[in-house]
Length: 174
Image 1 (cartoon, rainbow, N blue to C red):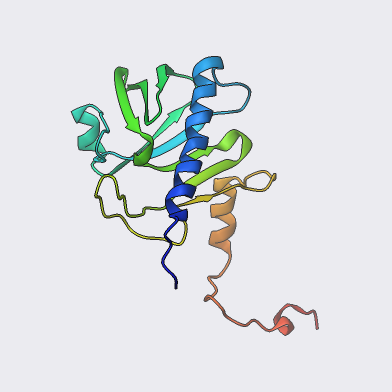
Image 2: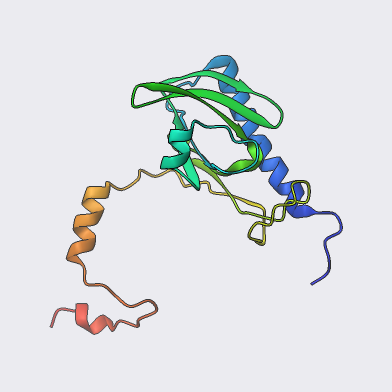
């Protein structure tokens, strides 16, 4: 494979992290509207992440936060955002660089981004390489199945081996 001298992975990654930045900037100005809410997952030990020690102990690698009803002081900058959330009724301010994000989702409109890890030339951090820096994860407009119903129906079905060929004769009435 030819060497990518343009750096398409980094360009794509920066553009998709820009989507998150723009969404947060809009919410910073006008608040969350209708069904919109955000699930943001990030690396807790990434350079520039600032979270209280009790959260770092509880989430030593990765943490997901939800911006929906109770968040305060959302402040979006070019490279990071700050927000205050309540954890067991204790307010905590978090500072999260956009480069620390591993996932972003707005379940209210079935939109999501999964950030794959790549080599970080600026920070010198070695992260797992992938074909694309970030992958849009946009779900089709259909209701999500009820997890309880899914568990029940899955428990009733016999487990099939992956790639198993099933004869249709077993399902025909005789």
